[in-house]
Image 1: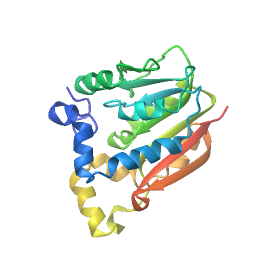
Image 2: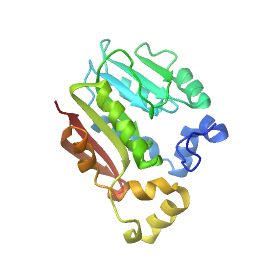
Image 3: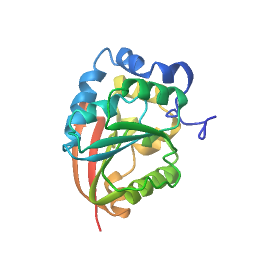
Image 4: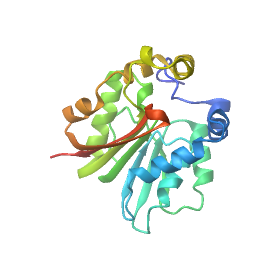
Length: 216
């Protein structure tokens, strides 16, 4: 079952089972270096409790766990059965990493407040009101001063992209991505009580890690 049929972030079947391999192939081997650098830029501290939304196969969670000590932990939220199975295999020997079968677009309470929330190439794939629900969930589950990190497309005008970037973007991405890249995400996050923005760009500026802190 797909909750949003027009989206391409709800992965199932072959793609879900082989997601990491496919990303490596599509990127001609560049994805591994990119995601390592992006996770390092999140700035995870040893004792952080990190909420990983749309956690996928667990690849990102394991990279984040390298920055933790025995006090820290990663809790991934995912709904794809294939992805969850991969996550649990990858994290089998990681005591401070777990995954829960839980929707990120519906209200949830995990019984604690997290120091950080991380979402990677997921939020662009939802209708905008649903994105706002996700942001609201992040705010409700972060401690005061906790940080929200969004790794996703940067802001740009699709029609102004050079052809070598525009063609794959328009052919591969779902319709929601076109709306995502033309919105002011600092303004959106500010409206939900986030501030102190920092950012780092990748892939010739078309990808951005945007970080914001929860304000009182």
